[in-house]
Length: 134
Image (cartoon, rainbow, N blue to C red; front, side, top):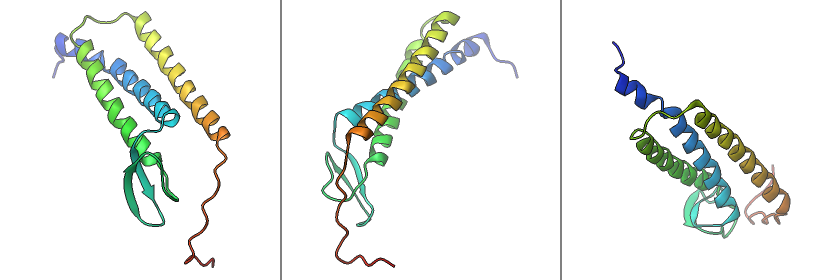
């Protein structure tokens, strides 16, 4: 089984499309941390899910932020791969530039997560009246 030159040419764009998808994930995750938007919230004590901007009780939005970021990154990676496969091969310098942009994006998101978690001093929700510690 041999790979045709046309197929090999398109497969060389896949790593860049994956890098674009990872960058889009990082940027969308950071955007959702900085700008609250309606997302999926899980209420573990009530075992229910809601779609809202802010929680009304003890809830977590990590799952919702991650799912939205995965969907946006998949779309971004698919669009970039579609654009790249219509173009000629990219030079190694451009591919190295994409890798540098990926590293900067990951560092940026880590910094955003650290800064936003340092700036938040959440007040713990009171325990439900029915809760009895063991």
